[in-house]
Image (cartoon, rainbow, N blue to C red; front, side, top):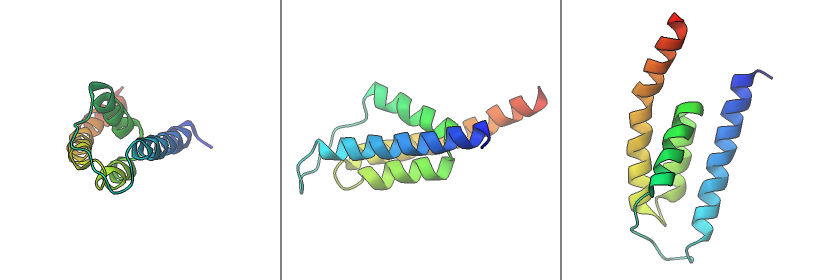
Length: 96
């Protein structure tokens, strides 16, 4: 297995675990309107950069949208921001 595949797999697993643990914090049937904390924003951006873009964004958005709708919206926006960022990083790495 290549290092890239290991990184992608790990970031996907970390995202799933994060969403499951976050959803366990709130009681069934309730929702929270709190936004992503600074640490959660950084985690979302890092996972968006190192992970498969679509998978991580989809897991974050659909995993949080029922119980944490505001966090889900912000995670989705940050995920879309990481796409051009990853493109730029790839272009820079390809030219080195």
